[in-house]
View 1 (cartoon, helix red, strand yellow):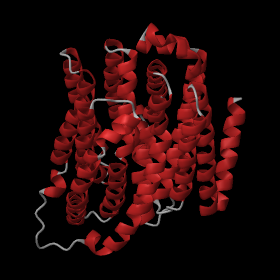
View 2: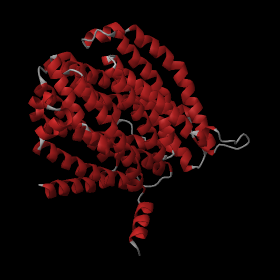
View 3: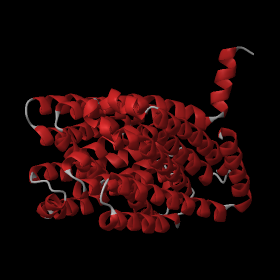
View 4: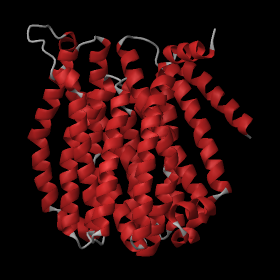
Length: 443
């Protein structure tokens, strides 16, 4: 058997590897462009403005929780339709979710616009127009989430990759131009909205295989098997869990802007961006796992084997990243951001630990939701809220925030492993043995 034949057989028999490779390639290219954006902006604006920008970007991630919820719900039920090869049913789900966004999204936008002065005061930001741009981006993200979730459910990872790259290219071009001509913080945040708009238009075009399907007389097998009442019940725990995950991954940066000095907040933002290379590099594994596991669950096929491969792969990659960050923190931070942030390099390895724990927690969360095991959401929300109040009332500097967030991620992972164990004790015990052997081998 030739080498090309062996490769073709390997990828055809291992959907996780194949789809992860496709999404990884596109996502990593988009992430490189994303980092170019952050690095260029970090070099041409002051440390203080960069801290403001990163805190607002983290705020955007938190308020995008409803969008993340919509995307996961769309992906879950689109995966069911894919299992039935039913495009008509997917179109019905697409219409249903968009109607709900119009009904509830517009009032939410109005409410957030009214509380803008209070949010600006908490974050020590005087420019309310920047926050209005963020609320517009939030509204747009809801519609984009439906499209991206549908594409994920149908495992159109190539289109998802191209869509992400296009959005980042638009953001990068407009971001640099707007900052250069003097728009400052408004230019940075506005470029995110323009990039999101570009991605939404591209995703709508990518969904033409569903939206333009002519099946007026056809019977939707997927629509008859999906109980839209159960879909509504599924949305609440997904929203709560997504909120918890997003808080654990972003609230520290928002709170850093409130607690720390402008200079320290800027350094915290740089450390966060550099360490999240690990999350961006491994996050695609969770996205692919969710779609494959949801489809297998609908077909009553074992899903734990896919999770086992995905998590072991993630642990290996994360461990290598943490080692590299501990060995060369000054070189990495200086290479990416220059000498302005060199004094914070000693924290970088521990930031990498925090992000690696978060990446693993997110993988567990995505897997459990894909098989409709949603109780983990409430446990993670409790951990997230405790972490927020701990940082808010205890933390005084970068070290304090870092320690609290690492402990929070450890507790979150423990909660996730507990729910894995209660789902399937025998498989979980074998899985824990694999992790132990892997850690012993690395040591």
